[in-house]
Image 1 (spheres, one colour):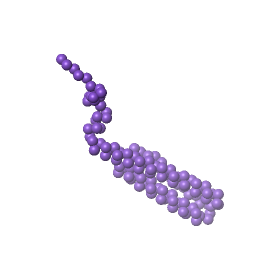
Image 2 (cartoon, one colour):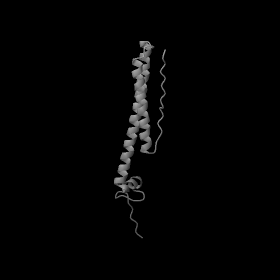
Image 3 (tube, rainbow, N blue to C red):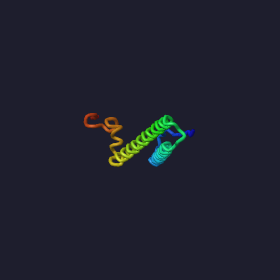
Image 4 (tube, rainbow, N blue to C red):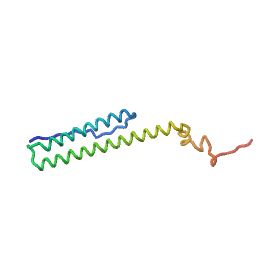
Length: 116
């Protein structure tokens, strides 16, 4: 009887750079390819019963789906960081005004005139 063992790293760290996220995505893609190869070899394995093959296929498919979800999440995080960076570069003053409008830089609706 052949036992197929799989090991997946399911933790996602909060990488501060897009290069870190890119390498994580590449590693996850490599794991997906390895699992797909295992799935192919499982189809030609004659030592397992059909029930065992079906079980193994389900396990491998669920692991592939989990990895693909992690890849999607990392890609969305990258896109969000890129969008935030783009917005900050387009209007650097707006980044400050979003935080302090009406406090240190009064708006038209929130201003005070003092005469001495």
